[in-house]
Image 1: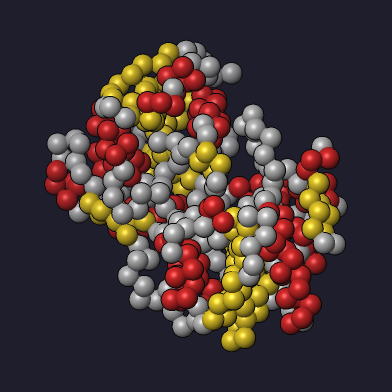
Image 2: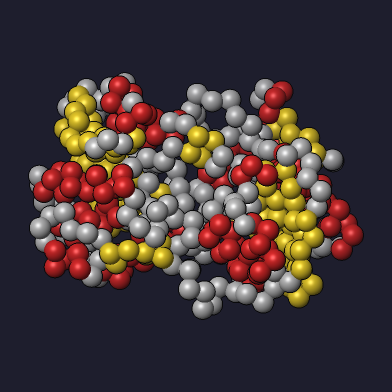
Amino acid sequence: MASDNRFECGEHLLELERPGRGGRDLRAWDAADELLLEYTDAHITTHHIAPGALAIIDDAFGALTLALNDMAPASIADSALLPQALRKNAGPNQLPVPAALNWQAPPEGPFDLILLKIPRQLDYLEYLLRWSNTILSPQGRVVAGGMIKHLPDRCADLFAKLMGSNEPQRAKRKARVIVAARGEAGLEGWANLNKGYVLPSFTGNAAASEEASLLGMPAVFARERLDIGTRVFLPQVAGAVARLTPGARILDLGCGNGVLGLSALIQRPDLAVDFADVSSQAIASARGNLERLAVEACARFYHTDGVPQGEHYDLILCNPPFHEGGTVGDHIALRMFRQASKALNSGGALLVVGNRHLGYHAKLKKDFVRVEQRASDPKFVVLEARKLVARQ
């Protein structure tokens, strides 16, 4: 590994890389990771925290989990990137690959210390603090931190509202840490645990969508309302789905609450639809929505970064994200496009929606033989990228 991948913090020395590729040389940690480790090391020593009594929430690429390996932490992350990062970085550091948990099956605790990387979404932070209150031991503490520019608005107010006590620490290197005691507020009875909307009909089958209420957990994109890009996208999804032969396979790539794939199943329950998302709360939400809709269909769910490995499809639906944590760009979308091209059956198509300024039309031509615009409005464009050659 290159020397700029060397992570040094106190007695911790690791070589760390981000998983995957994207044409970007980005470090696998930030100053908030360093600051969190400094406070955590001191707390472990002062309060004699035993191995197995530590939980780590939303470690990005393994810096916290691997640095604290001797504490046998329970490492829980919403993102499927964490298990990838742990597999990539454990071996070069002569460490066993730690288990990575997610919100589909979180640990029950109790824990004496929770190390928390503060997320950008306020609702998701509230979920994490309420969950922490349910599994902290009575004298336990949360050590939470993040880069100041990425902390959500009203972050301090939320800690004051939910936690028993709060001790904001002095900011260092543009990062901040808060040490908090257990509070009374938990997840039970929390009105904002799931938010949603009624799915509009774009197929003429209004009766089928009247009861199609889609809910999303706090980490899910656009869980409260249908985002405007998807609103432009759905009529084209309906048209593409109508043209498929019975039994055709669809992938809802980056599924969120499952709006695209569920719309396809409502219209055509004879199709087979897979749902894939990097967020475990998205997968849990999509699965729950399918169960509530009670659609008799063939559906599978994958908590994974991108296209499920080894699977192939006749149609892939994608509203790609343009940010990964605090990193904004098209590298995630381009990776999705490459994976989709390889996963499509001969004659299959990728249907994608994106902001006009991102220029997906030109970028898709690197991986597809034909790219056509299917719809647009002043902000968004819907593109169909078709694969006409036999899969290699």
